[in-house]
Amino acid sequence: MQAPEFWNDSEAAQKVVTELKSLRRIYGPYRDLEREVKDAEGLIALVEQEPDESLAAELDRQSKDLLPRIQALELQSLLSEESDTHGAILTIHPGAGGTESQDWAEMLFRMYTRYLERRGFPSQVLDLQQGEEAGIKDATIEVDAPFAYGYLKAERGVHRLVRISPYDANHRRHTSFASVFVYPLAEGNGDLQIPESDLRIDTYRASGAGGQHVNKTESAIRITHIPSGMVVTCQNERSQHRNRDSAMKILKARLYALKIEEDMKKRETLTGGKKDISWGSQIRSYVFHPYTLVKDHRTDLEIRDVQRVMDGDLDPFVDAYLRHKDSK
Image 1 (cartoon, rainbow, N blue to C red):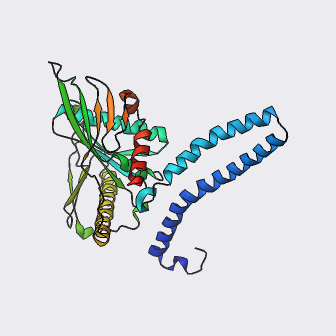
Image 2: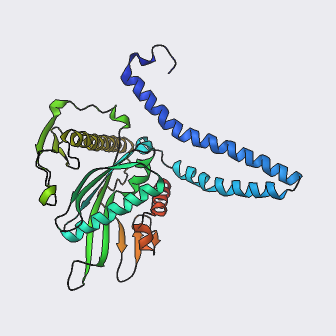
Image 3: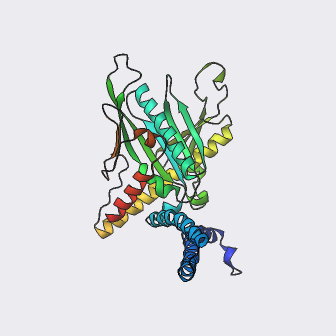
């Protein structure tokens, strides 16, 4: 990067900068921990030579602080795919079933919001469409944090809910489904250029709950990527310009994910291997009745405390998925 001609080719230079960022995210925390472990080892040598209660207490504090960080870095080391270091776009879509499924989609939206807060991942809602009676028809969240895609890819697939429906007057047990898709953010979206000629952009009035909140201007955006037939809509913002920006972010992330999937298929064809991408398979069941249980069908991990999971404690499932995937 210090070479005089480095910035002559801005596109090539940007790729190098992006690669450097990815490497620093792995190398930096490792070097920091390595230094702190060496400091702790030096403290051990001191305590062994001259027993001291205050030094022993400090050593105990350091070890309790270091161990979970080492375990977290070990888990992060499993995120070895090219896009794992990137941010992510997460979308939630209710399945068939009207209000019941839309309510389940909103429960998942709350669960992921809590999970992102727990992990300290900054996020923003790009699109959120409310259901007519309850729940949501669609939700899209941008998570602009290092390794967000690497962790959140564990959540893509179909999520199944079993409970006594609050919308059923006869209090019968219902099964609902919602799909979660996760796409990696192309870093700065600099590597992915979409010609304007490939896009058809339509505007329309955003739908709402009615009354004074109905949008009277055509601020909602629908973008169709003509070569792939991919359609993206966004109506969360009052500004047409901001909705367009959000829709382009989503479109670029989806096209980037499509490119990764195509590259993976090419590699599988060359190597004769086959990997389960699991874009649409049922991955997890959340049972509220007649017993409480959350079970991941890929790893067989079971947690009885459903409320804990719904409050965003997804780390055990993400951990188990990454280790299971690595063992494969």
